[in-house]
Length: 249
Image 1 (cartoon, rainbow, N blue to C red):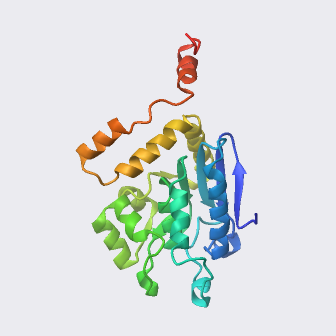
Image 2: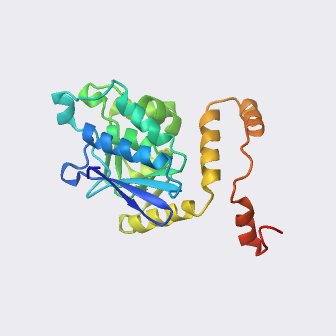
Image 3: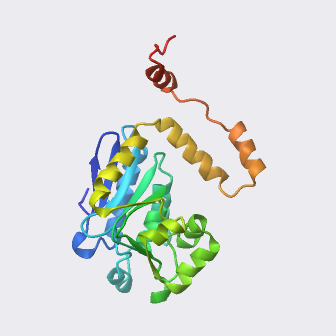
């Protein structure tokens, strides 16, 4: 695999890094090919309980590489980018977008395909499709309103305004804002806490949330009861470790 997206396995979690720092991690077909390959590998990797996606250098990503757009991109199919992000979204383990610096348009679509966003205090977000006479095809029109509400999504999409980390947190786009000088440590600590919990529960919870998203409450409650996946294979060991009693007791 190339080095446009790198993978670094830590203690129970994996760090994926968009690695075009000289181009502000602008997103090309090549970047997506490598991201997709990593996602395919991670889907069946039982050693990874959490994934963090971030950018190298000064920012997460400045967005879709406009030079690639202008020259015409050689993609396998019209929906290939969107399909790749859906694969990312459907990984069985939690996926965190760790965003510092720029996160615009296509980059924001990538971040929104993660389970949630943690932002450094220097992060800036925006959807500039309208600025360039473009329309979303990687998921912005679907994921942004689900994250921040329809009216707020419309405001961001229609104005192409940039917002800072504090505003992103206020509207629910980012779950947490962390000082830049503590960003790496805070992300590692968060991923470690998630990785310490049950991979079985993480996967079951993600499936449950995905299937019932947007359903009426009673339908969701019924699905939770009837389709509950029960307990994981490590349940007894985890309880025994907490109580100090043998798992066979």
